[in-house]
Structure formats: structure tokens, C-alpha cells
Image (tube, rainbow, N blue to C red; front, side):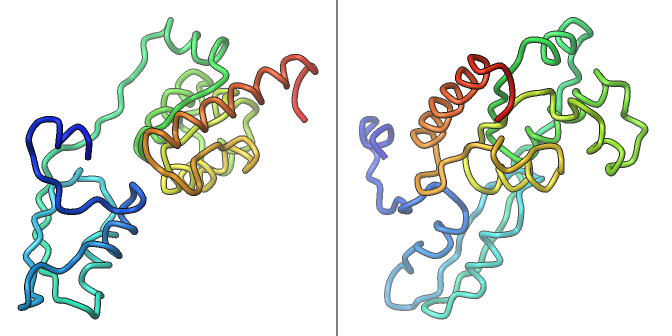
Length: 188
């Protein structure tokens, strides 16, 4: 909100949490008619959460026009980068579920397990890159957990304050935990 107001824009609404569910629950209807047209620019890979939840609201009618404005495409790391992520990275920070998928695709390449089925990948030692995951919010954290590559205690995310500030605090927590694990010589 501050960034917009600093540039002279008037901000009429900011959800209490930075996630799609909260936005869809809290978006106020405009005017007395209670019929609201919503333009929703999104990633091609974004879930349908916002339009689905707005469509189910009882306090107003929302007609959502989703416009896929971009697509996230994973980067294939070079050989030296693959070696680096497997040997030197202890914390991987993810801003979206597709970032998790891109990371895992690169880890699979580094381990030479791209052709294995998901169950075999999950059982491969180091299949998460030997890194704890720090996620921007619960949707991304859920993707890490559902991948089967991380245990729940190796996934950090801001449960009550998703967004940049909460993500930053989760990074601090993860860093402290990783340093403590290193000090004590490994896992818990």
C-alpha cells in the first residue's frame, strides 16, 4: 500500500493477508448494485482459487475476467550451478509453487533421476537438494510438502503473515535452525 500511495495512487482496499483466499474473502463489493466485474491478471499456472471463491460469495455477485498475463518457465541450471546447489545450498527460498517445481527439476537433473517416477524420486537421498525450504506462504509450502521431498519440519513459511515481511522472518528462523543443526552435526 505504501509504495502505491508514495506514487500518488489512492488505495481502496488491501486484504489482511497476502494470499488469494483472503483477497477473495475480503474484497468489498462496490456500490449498491452488488454486481462487480473483476479483472484478474494472473500467471497462466495460477490456481483458480480467486475466481472460484468470488463466484461463491453470497454478499455480492462477482463476475471475474481472468487474463493470463504471464507464464513462469523454469530455468535449467548449468553444470556448475547444479554442482553448487547440491553441495553448497542449505536454504532454498520459494516465491511460488512453480519455483518449487523448477528447483526439483534441477535437483533431479543433478542427481540423474529425471526419468524415475515420483515415488522413486521421493526415496532418493538428497532429492530436495539437501536444503530446507523457505516459502512465501502456505500454498507454496503445501507444494513442498506434497512433493514428498521435504519433511514438514524442513519447510518454513509465515503461517499468520504471508508476504514479503513474513517470508523474511521465516528466512531468519530457517537460518538460525540450519546454523544450529550444523553446530550439532546434522539433523535433529
